[in-house]
Amino acid sequence: MNQKLLSAVLVLLGCIFLSSESLKYSDMNKTSSDIILTILYDNYTYNQELESDWGFACLIEGLEKTILFDTGTNGKTLLSNMEKMEKDPADVDIVVFSHIHQDHTGGMKMFLERNNKVKVYLPVSFPADFKKMIKDKGAEITEVSGPVEIIESVRTTGEMGVEIIEQSLIIDTEKGSIVITGCAHPGIADIVRKSAELSSGELLIAMGGFHLVRTGENEINEIIKIFKDLGIKYAAPTHCSGDKTLEIFRDSYGDHFVDLGVGRVLTLSEL
Ligand SMILES: [Zn+2]
Ligand SMILES: [Zn+2]
Image 1 (cartoon, protein in one colour):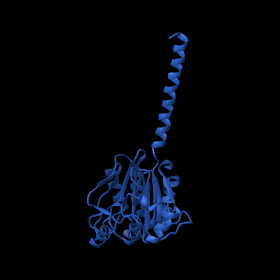
Image 2 (cartoon, helix red, strand yellow):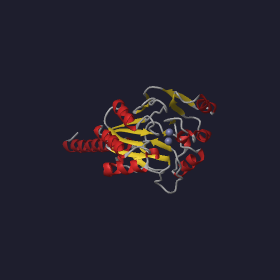
Image 3 (spheres, protein in one colour):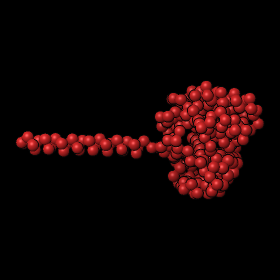
Image 4 (cartoon, protein in one colour):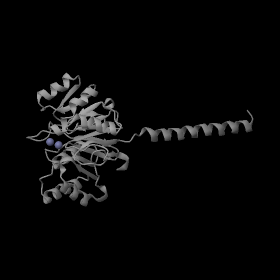
């Protein structure tokens, strides 16, 4: 091989090497998928096209499985909101229930008529007739007592509370953990404390129902202090949190307050 040909071959090989490197890099960008949280059921409204109603449901996409957290009060409203958001019930792999109240479980019966191939994670203390309804429709149940890993990087707090038993969801991300609550009956402060213990890093956001409708301003401020001491970067109270709570959190968190409400699509990349 003469000198000229050799250098031409080397340049060519270099080009191939470089382009394969840049290919790898762009592939890496594509596959590091974003987490998408869509509020499908909420008494607060974000997108006017959707129907708001008392209750809560949140769809979690972008992980190895698609998770529906709670199902709202009314199955018809849930399914119609899903349709408007172009979310197919058949794409849901896992349903997680926070607690037994109708405004979180009421939509399940109709949902199962559209997709009974889901794995359902519910507190072991749920009534037998609700568990039976799910099994009769053909879905598989996992009963939760202590903290459980659902899929990689997603776990529940396990059952918390005394009177109304509830679990919350924790999603670990490279930016910190996302905590999603249904109604937070066991107390939002205890839930975020436990989530901080269970999660691998810092807490990025606490979102969902905080159950502070009848809570006084001083107590709400104390809860915000607990949030900030734990380093929770964003707050997104909705559903049963109360207007006053939203107002106080908004004042305190400023541009790190996240508006939810039905139809809101929150992505990890915007946090
Ligand atoms: Zn409740
Ligand atoms: Zn509720």
